Length: 242
Ligand SMILES: O=C(O)[C@H](O)[C@@H](O)[C@H](O)[C@H](O)COP(=O)(O)O
Image 1 (cartoon, helix red, strand yellow):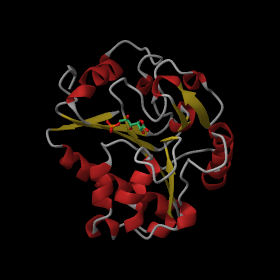
Image 2 (cartoon, helix red, strand yellow):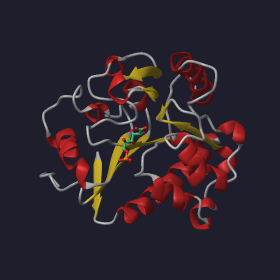
Image 3 (spheres, protein in one colour):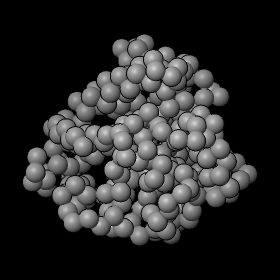
Image 4 (cartoon, helix red, strand yellow):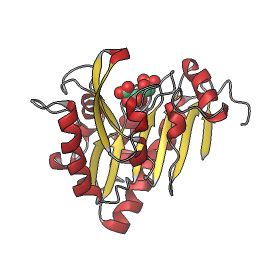
């Protein structure tokens, strides 16, 4: 586990962009492709903007990049709430990624539960049975959730499935999410945690007693890979061991 704290979130966007490029290069060099899961929320926007700029864009072999998501709100791509819609707008529409290599979680005319199975099929095809992502980006909510692993939800108990679709009562919306066991197989996981409203949850997740039902981000402990936390000073303000 590594934690980097900066006053300015823009600096962390640059750190993440360097890391994305490095991770893509290493994966493409070793196996000819890069499997990445993107995150929604506001925190990764700086990273997406940078990756769409020439400086970083030119360093990635986009035709070898396979794009998935950590989670999605069950809304169509043109909805303001769509994580995939945001990523297209900020990044994917501006880089030469191949359309058939981009896998939004939402699809029309199917239930989120059935889509979760379908999505698992795409993952098995591109990642293989091992299910090891090269890179997974995650945000964290002020309640300690990440992806759509929300406090007190049944998906937190999942041990086998890679993807789950379910109705999130507290937000009155269906969600689809990668499960913790799949996320934990990744080579590299990067958390973005920006803003004072995250300070309490971040303290609980990193330094509080173990209680993943209440603070699901505590479940993210890669088996063989590593996790890097990119945190601004406001979000880090309650941490003691840094
Ligand atoms: O669909 C979602 O709800 C997101 O993927 C979620 O997990 C997000 O990353 C956090 O809520 C942090 O969001 P912010 O970056 O906007 O604080």
